[in-house]
Image 1 (cartoon, one colour):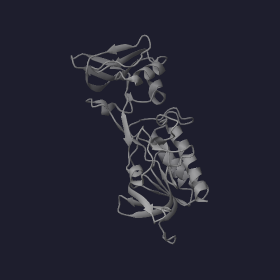
Image 2: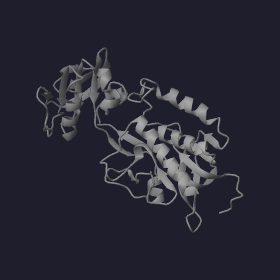
Image 3: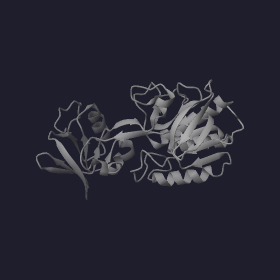
Length: 302
């Protein structure tokens, strides 16, 4: 690999969410040349405010990103480009580096690669649900539960997650309802949780939150609806690089954010250790994992 190439970086960070931003900052703090690629697509794009993040509880995600971009501008070795990566592959027969092909047709090379591209959520196919996603409809009670305090809350689907969600929300909501959507309820529900067995045919925003419409024409209003989405990798890079993947569909990393491939680290929602059944999805945890992955990358580059 020709180290005289101007577009050779110590590391390329793919993904401009909290994990990628923190990784770039950490690498920049020790003057490693780093390129941050921000596609402008974020898992929490529909969210008005972040929560459960000390000193940033209630901060709009866009404000956090803008603040970090301003901070990164102070580091001469950090470059930020608002462009998506499309393809990555090893550089050279020994796989000692990486080539990243960008959506604008340009190509960059790096020794290390930090993937922070997140997950893509696919919601149950219910009319109107996508319009509520990130506000009246959510998947994390730690991120959204308090905003529904003292009001009725529903959980869509009666699978095992319904028992977990209703137990967490029991001290928060005034009333809890499981929307079984025409299927058997498999969850062990706590006492006092109501069950609506009818199929759900749609959702819409209402003055009090979200109105659920059932197949028999009846409706019910809730402050919020918790949904368990199907989450998949938002980018194809794990497959392109042949990284080990866990049953959750996320990239397997060790406690330092290292993947199965040398000098490829992963952070944020797209990755977790085998000790966890799924990633612990929150802005704070994503940022922390970005710092760990980047710190380990610095050690790997030595």
